[in-house]
Amino acid sequence: MPDLVLDRLAKRFGANQVLKDLSLTVTDGEILTLLGPSGCGKSTTLWSIAGLHRPDSGTIRFGDRVLFDGRGVHVEPERRDFGVVFQSYAVWPHMSVADNVGYPLKLRKVGRKRRRERVMEVLELVELERFGDRYPHQLSGGQQQRVALARALAHPPHLLLLDEPFSNLDAKLRDRAREWLKALQRQIGVTTIFVTHDQHEALSMSDRIVVMEAGAVRQIGTPTEVYEHPADPFVADFVGATN
Ligand code: ADP
Ligand code: MG
Image 1 (tube, rainbow, N blue to C red):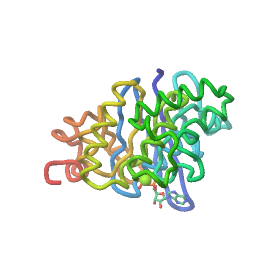
Image 2 (image 1 turned 120 degrees about the horizontal axis):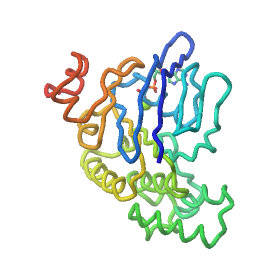
Image 3 (image 1 turned 90 degrees about the vertical axis):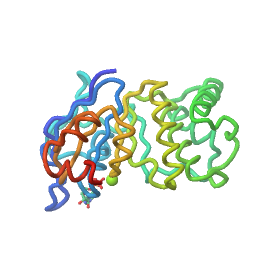
């Protein structure tokens, strides 16, 4: 897969300058985590990548495809082929698990037989192969998150975007979910951008971490680099051993 490049993205909501010349590159196959305190612009960055927000300026490129350029180019979310699991993107309560997961394929006019096969494949990936006939209210919060993940993977995405996907889980389940997601990501090799405000989660999940504060990048590095060699006092305080 090509690299995703954000170049000097800026985004304002009213008087609030939420992203300030944000630049970063996400490389093939990695888990890149956006880490920072609540309100620093992580979700806005992810929504911009997904195409759900239009930045005010800057560019977003995926390989040689320009997704956004601030001069009129804005590829619609459904044409980006990115899988998204956002906290607010609940599964549909009136659809069975299998229908939820198969929905993106139905939208793309994939035939019934192939759809059923693919739904089984992704339900196996998230270890819910026996739950296809159930309805969301019959599942736990963690299982519902896995349904949302299966749906994001159904039409193999070019990029997986996860916005605090474990925030509804209790601490013990969250540990398990992290390990499980990391193993799954390795297995399928999909480039993943993961958002969290939890430094422990970032340190345990990521190939690289982008530490953000007030809409800007403070440091980009491996977990070891940002933990052992923080670029500034903010990073040291937010990620460091004192936490
Ligand atoms: P994070 O995900 O890091 O917690 P967000 O990207 O959600 O941060 O928000 C960054 C800032 O932008 C916050 O000050 C938030 O209040 C503001 N913001 C986010 N979305 C909107 C919106 N749709 N309209 C107005 N302000 C927003
Ligand atoms: Mg957020």
